[in-house]
Image 1 (cartoon, rainbow, N blue to C red):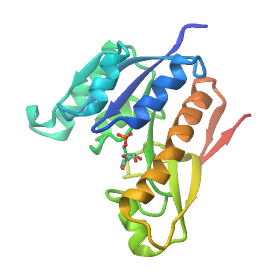
Image 2: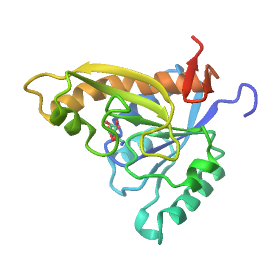
Image 3: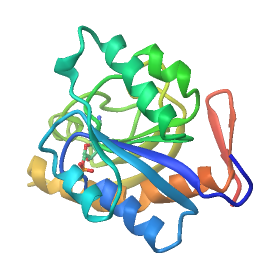
Image 4: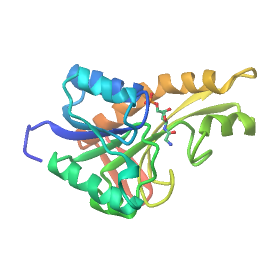
Length: 206
Ligand code: GAR
């Protein structure tokens, strides 16, 4: 990265893109010294693509069905990201598991947000898992992506209470509200080089 040039991010999405919107808002407000080089979705009609287009950000559809396997998909994804000179890959509700092709190409430069307090409730339907288990608190986690599913070093977490009569939707909304603050905060720390990794432990410089 060149000195004083804004850090180049790619945001990968599959759905509504409310986290993408939060990141766009922080970047546009000058709170994060970065530019969003592209938004990539594996789902053609994801609303996140519309959000990107509204803000003049290149919105790219990259569908899984065009590839014979996940590694081929990732090879092509790496090419797209490199062609946009992306420095940090942000998974914001991107519902695909990445292979070693992507992980090795962007080592410690891929981060994900997960709607639970990892290592509890990894994988799909984290909010439903939390309700079924009966926990009193859940929340969200921003972590580096490694070769496992939701197993990478934890950067930040936020906690929310679980109410007795919560539906999945109510709990998801409560968690999302925290996600929209936590994810930009983690990106800002990375962009400002205020994060260092020591084994599994992530040290923050405030
Ligand atoms: C968010 O809750 C995010 O944590 C979750 O998908 C939602 C995307 O919402 N991600 C995962 O479950 C990844 N395993 P958004 O499209 O409105 O940002």
